[in-house]
Image 1 (cartoon, rainbow, N blue to C red):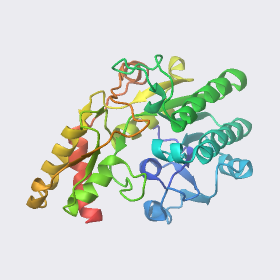
Image 2 (image 1 turned 45 degrees about the vertical axis):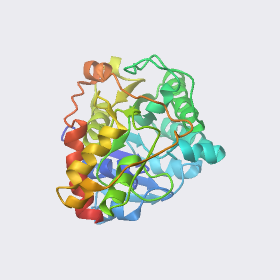
Image 3 (image 1 turned 180 degrees about the horizontal axis):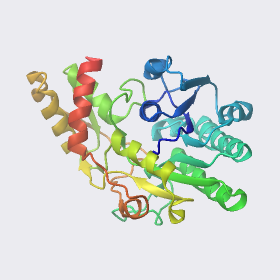
Image 4 (image 1 turned 180 degrees about the vertical axis):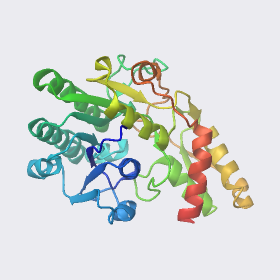
Length: 326
């Protein structure tokens, strides 16, 4: 970003992706406001920033429009990460997922519009591709959603598009593909697969793969996601605004291969991990079999150039988990 100090609001800033964005933009000399209700985020993720004079924490919920209005006051850019993630969670409790992901999103859009925010960049999701079987996933070809969560994330894109066209609010949606890396929470019923498996393997416990392990994902390291958020804020290309982008590396890895590399990298710290058995369970409801992003649009319009392949990112992430969670 330019040397001018920008004022950035990061909703969900105490979460995995949000806290990494807070750290990055603070290091770049920006003023950062974090809005979080700590439903899935953690105080310890933002602990190091609390003494930074450029950092402000608002403990509050995006379901409250007044909280949103307070948070966006004097803000240049919004990076909206706050959401209830997880397909299984949305299947178990579709109402809360909708309240946070749709009503909360609409509150943030409305407050941003009214406050004259320059640009609203939001976390969209690869789940929007739904039952579309075409690979790689291209932004303008989607299928029907396969879960309540996927519906909420698609509705976000529809609302953002309407706010761009009707009110002139600049929006950019980033369809995240299976993001992983430092600070991703390994605990809880809805923990993401990589940190969850890392924790189990570090305890010499057998991870359970849903299905036969041949489902594949475009696992995306956190630093690639940070790069996309920065490009979305800074682009001056009019053709690049008011649209959505796949945010991924553009390669796919099966769950079997993912576990192979996890065991390989972790066994450098503890050789016993190489011998841990893998258990196979039933397929999970709402899961898409294969996920692979085309990142051509982001390369072309935003000059996106992801630095970390899956294996490069996993090596760094495993080291971080070993040092911080062992």
